[in-house]
Length: 538
Image (tube, rainbow, N blue to C red; front, side, top):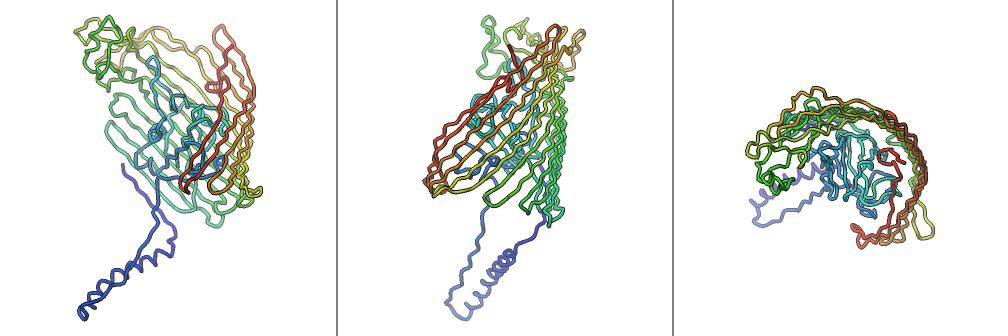
């Protein structure tokens, strides 16, 4: 991977003083040597040069205004993965980034040979795919998220119902996007590697007007890559993310962000485990399968016609205003739409799906391709969040109050399908992805529509009694209404539900030193019916 970086900014005057000091240090030995020719004793003056060491990987705070304290004083497990670490690792997706966080799994293989159709995140054993956020706004849709426009990834572990409303009881993931800054800079990367890996990214920041605090930032990405160790599988995507900012050096700041991503991938149905160390036959009547040779892990059992086409559009407007250092207002409005068209020819290698007509002739061993996965789905979200942060004191107790209101509408439209005919089996040791399937088809039969409207209000307070002791408390009330309509041949369904969710948290923090803290936390989290897939049932 090659990085090209250019940055222009004013140099502080301390650089010239340091240069003079270093120049003086270089001259001193010569002067001392001259003195020794005249006098055998003498002592050179000492010169001290100091500098501040910067930590590129360490973050001090989370991006959300709800977390008003530094990370060391935040009573919850919160990991911040900065872009400097992602760049050094060559991490290009959210899945890559989350490998830096223990307790977070990114499993894409599902039951019966099917795979997930986007980021499949599991935190402490629970599915957290519906608890992914971008700039603290929920991000729906089945997509493999790219990091080309990401400043940092924040992983929150533990119940967060008071912070985010409905969601996984084990935490959430927030992706913080890159924003314009008041300087000129350009950064690009080019990747070329084995298995046809090709990727180019560019990050350009331009200061438009220093006096008015206006700046533009443009991030670009294109990729067309195979997957090392996997035949046929391919990831092809492109993205553009322009952002414009005004008033960066003033109390009132405005950010306009847009994101567009296209993906046209060949999905991966997984590799066979036959022959791996520890493998045992799925059929007690055929123990010889346990001793079968190892299957090539690069084998592809799907079809060259499999596809995963995704389109994303996201528009965000954020306004911030500082009434004073102790009173700040932030409002975020967003509309986003994600569309996915997906086909995966899955296979089965369990006892019923693995055929071995001749135990000694491996060329006769086959696996069934009877579980094709078809999806055509669109997700939309429109939301507005308003947060007010106030710092005040009641006697000797310092309060940091954060209150807000959130209005959100989420919609999902998904088509339903049925299959006609059968697909041919795949040879276990030598599969053919260019197979013909006469008489086989996947037909659209109906649709499912779901919608959830949510009105939320929340309040947090951090009470600081002294340098050692503090309390953090928060409450949140969500009122939701979910409607569901299903239309399939001979069956029409219309269902709805509504209710309220009340979540809270309470934590006590003790700081034995300025760089450490001990805390005890109790928090709640809830998921209403239909919160993950907008589907309701009687």
